[in-house]
Length: 102
Image (tube, rainbow, N blue to C red; front, side, top):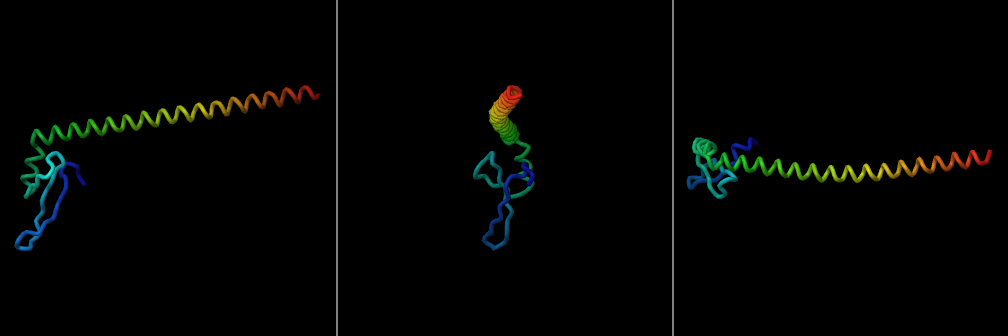
């Protein structure tokens, strides 16, 4: 669903006809009865500011998630680095003991 168009609701009127209502998260509880009024709302300053702030908060959350992943990757890298160094030391000790046996 295109973010710009918000939520769609279908309600029955008193005549039992289905009505399409448009809603937007920037104005909770407000329903727009036609696509034209909703489009007018989308071009409003309130909606534009809401969209900008939502984009900023989405980017901030992605940045935080990326930083967390980076910390995890660095920790994992350290673990593998220590395993590699331990393996190399063990290999050197084996080679040294093998040479001592000859």
